[in-house]
Image (tube, rainbow, N blue to C red; front, side):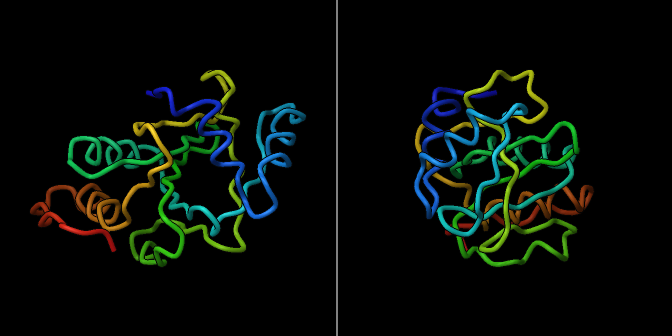
Length: 158
């Protein structure tokens, strides 16, 4: 599920919000449940969807040639959060997905904690590359409209 980017490297990257990484890293260290609130809209936005179709979307993205950034699986609440570049735009509501951006917060699991935690990070990259919103949108459309004709491939992110 996770490679070397999931763990300390992802924790440091995620914690690098507008008020600096130390605060978030300390919150994770002090939190009993290993969760800290991270501000969306600075280094990343997040797209939240239900876990079952979310895993299908993740599989489609990984089968393609587009880069796939970190995704957080909240097993307790049954959601998958895909991190996308900031200001990707809220085109997600018509698909029944929630969009977190500036002013929003993600209750994020500490990537340095063991996978038995109720939320865990699913990573496939080796750096802080985020999932392209156009690729994510097309994969969501394909999964959510299963049985429909596959959508054409995209040559550039939104």
